[in-house]
Length: 380
Image (cartoon, rainbow, N blue to C red):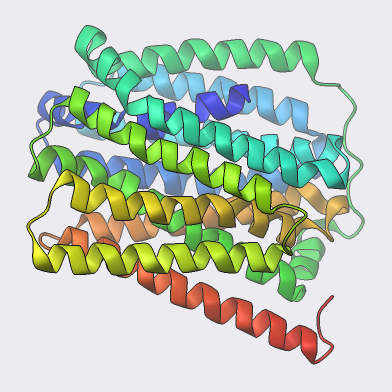
């Protein structure tokens, strides 16, 4: 849970500081938005190494090392004199934050299967609550400490989590899985359920991450909200995550995982359609943007824990490789898609709506493919 708290600072708490960062480094608002996308790609690359390696050397040393590197990156951002130096240290911070993937691995390691899905929903619900409050907290930090405030608090929290990891986590190393990383990656890729689960997670996360990156461009850059009003509006976005988590908890044990995923995909597609039509009948406003986005976010919150549990349910013995593979795809897809979307000059709301609708359609096709394969006897 502490790692979940720590994880919102590099991505969500910093959002109200976009204008101040742009002014401090004499760059455009879009250049700062790109820094978030590049951060996500750096996290993805780091997770690709840390997850499989944790199956060999254990979770604790890698988590502690990653936290230390993230602190170095955060402090480096504080003392950077130019945009290029800031970006370099943001990448260093991202490399360290790649170790946060181990929180999901620890869930897989420590808790029985029946509790894992519930805990993932709980963690996602907490993330939604933190996301809802993060921009408002970021606005307060921006007001009193400037853009540096989020980096100061991140550094302090990272040190606290590092100390907790030293005191709480066992030193017992994980026994390496027979066959090595490449063999286990091959087994994961050969499992259709795992591949489809990864793809569904990536589609849902891309919808979330694209909005996070472009929200300052739309709410601050286009609609002219100040950092406090931006934070207040974002409370509603995070509340949608919490509602989605509560709905997912109610659906657990009542509907199969693939049915829960289908329900979430339908909500994302509906949200995209509403957002697209709304932009045709009136100019962009807070309500015309945030109401459809909130509907889609509830769908995202339903899909992510269900698709993760669906993908991992047959791979407990290679949890590090499997979990990192999912998270690498999440952050890589989110970073790449958000970079492309943020570079578009005009029509961002309609493009955002298109991302929602396309993700829903592709997700439904993947579910249909999976169920057709099972009916032919090729699935579990």
